[in-house]
Image (cartoon, rainbow, N blue to C red; front, side, top):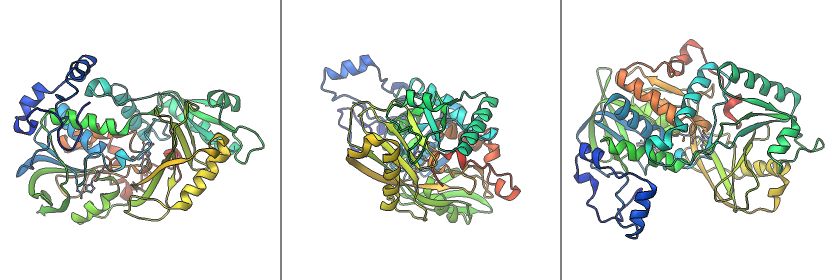
Length: 442
Ligand SMILES: Cc1cc2nc3c(=O)[nH]c(=O)nc-3n(C[C@H](O)[C@H](O)[C@H](O)COP(=O)(O)OP(=O)(O)OC[C@H]3O[C@@H](n4cnc5c(N)ncnc54)[C@H](O)[C@@H]3O)c2cc1C
C-alpha cells in the first residue's frame, strides 16, 4: 500500500531529490490498476506519498501545525491561489494531534446561519474529496441522529431542524418509533433512565476516516510543491515593526512573509509567542473503542444530555466519545471519572454494550472558545493569521476550514464565510453561541 510516513519501503529514490513541479507532474495515481500492477511486485514499488524535505531558509507562507486543518490550508493555498512556496511545520508527525485522535463524525447541523454556511461548505467539499485528492477518505454518510431526552430538548431540536432547513440544509425530526426503527439497539423504553422523546436527524451526516483525510491532503499538497516538515517544533515567532518576519524552530530559523497558525490545543502557546492572548481554553477530550462485534449500529447516535455519542467502525468496534474533562491541561490523556460516567450512560442507552470489553482509550487537547465557535482570520500582527478554537468539532470542518483560511491568508482579508469568525467578535460582542450544536458537553 501507499507509504505514508517514516522510511520508504520502495525502491525509488526519495522524491525529495526532485523538483516540486516535476513531482507534481509525476505523482503516482492510485487506482484499481495501480493496485493490481503493484501487487505483481509485492507492493515494493509504491512511491512515497510525500517527501521529507529539509526546511528552506525562507518561504512565502509557513503554516504551523500539520493536522488536517494545516494540511488542507496548504493544499488550497497551492491549488486555489497558486501559492506553492509553502511549508507546513509539524512538531511531531503529521496527523498525530487531534486529527488522528478524533471520533470521525461529520455533519453540518448547526444553528446559526454563519456556522451552518461554513460547516455545510465543509460537508460539500467532503462529498467530492476522495475523487479530488485521489485518496479514499472513506466518507460514510450513514445518517446522524441527535437524541432528545426531554420535551424541552425536543423543542430545541425542532428549532435546530427549522434553522437548518431555512439555511437550505436537509434535516428532519424523528419520532421515537422512527428512532427505534433506525437504531434497534437503542433503549427506547419510556421507563428507562434517559427516555427518548425523539431525535433530529441529518441523513448526510456520518463519518470519514481521519488519518486518510490528513494523508490525502498531505499527498496532494506535497504533489503541488508544498514542503511538509515533520519533527520541527516552532519555538518562537520573530516580529518586527508590528509584522511577522519569521519563526524560530528546532530545525533553525525560517523566514516567512506570512504565517498561518493552526495548532488546535496549543493555539494559546503560539499566540503568546507573538504577545497575544486568545479567549481559548485547552481541555482534554477523550474517546475509546470496544472490541469488534458484528454490525449492530448503522447510524451515528449522539446524546448531548448524557454526554455520549457512538458509531460503529468498519472493523466492528463501537467508537465512543464523551464530554471534555473539565480542567485545563496539555496532557493528551483524560481522567477516569469522565469515562466512568460516559460508560454508565452508554449502558443505559445501549444495554447491548454492557458485556463488551473496551480495547483502547486515548485523549487529545481541544481548544474551546467561550461561544464554542472557531476563530479564523487576521491578528493585530501583520502577516500573522490564526485558525483555532474548533474544540470538540473541528474534524468535520477540516476541508471548509482549510479552504477559507487559505483564502484569508492569500488575499489578506477574510473569506466571506470566515468573516463572522474573526477574533474581533470578542471585542464587538457578536458571538456565535454553538454550545448546543457542539454535540458533546462543554
Ligand atoms: C477525542 C476527540 C474526539 C473528537 N471527535 C470529533 C468528531 O467526531 N468530529 C469532529 O468534527 N471533531 C472531533 N474532534 C475535534 C477535532 O479532532 C479537531 O477539532 C480537529 O481535528 C482539529 O484539527 P487541527 O488540524 O486544527 O488540529 P490537530 O490535528 O491537533 O493539529 C495541530 C498540530 O499542530 C502541531 N503543533 C502544536 N504545537 C506546535 C508547534 N509549536 N510547532 C509545530 N507544530 C505544532 C501538533 O503537533 C498537531 O499535529 C475530536 C477531538 C478529540 C480529541
